[in-house]
Length: 359
Image (cartoon, rainbow, N blue to C red):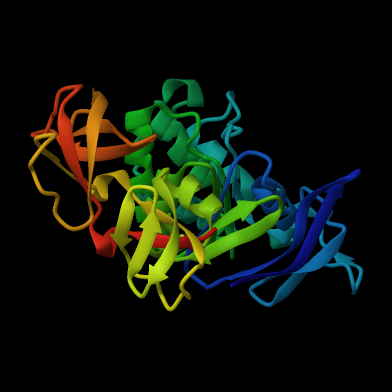
């Protein structure tokens, strides 16, 4: 288990991490997600011992690694945590086998495992990451995905109480990155290692995590399960960062009804009082789309009349941009629906998919 309390880190006048607190349950993968400069990598580096915080407390498996109050700061090499960097940091002259065994062979002599134990652990972790049979190869002789698995194996062979991963897939191409998401998830679940994962990629966070913490300006804006964060954002910032939904400004008119510039729309108002200013958020894939005659075609409840102004084919989906009044909405449909530019359409906003955010 990881416990971080009151963590603060400044760089001159810039507060990179601002009184940050969170906990990670044993065996869970916890993702710090956010844009560049939000403090997620500084948080990870502080846990690893690569940054010295100005204040706070860090515990891993009930062992205090840092405490400003108690003046405790264990150096990085003595924390015995696993770390996977964005650049992998593989040594070009070492074979796969030597790369993985190296962390077990460089510690204090009294703490090193016996040679037979080193061999057993190396064989086991190479089998887990599916690199068995490649023991004699150098990193340059491996594919990008194999290099990534090698970096993971080097971190896992130490059997660390906590695995830290700093944007480990960002150097891979799109298809390989998608494959490696599943691989990282498989490894983490199979080994049950408690992990903290840093990324700015929403898809990675949603696919990998037990819990996601969305960060902004050194603080956690919202934390929760991936589906909760995606479907029930607690702020406009989280909503926009987690999927760039359609946002429609409005005012609560009555229970279940929001007045907007496009007319009244039904949504779950969650006890908000009439007159409360809100933003209605609905993801593009939740909108419905149908062709509609400009005159004489009555709209269904929660439908808006608009005109397709653009469309883009994405393989399994087609994204339509629809102008509704002075606003543009995006609807992501399956590939069987492709409506030409200039077509009059009715855009449906299912009430159960409309989430309200306080404005």
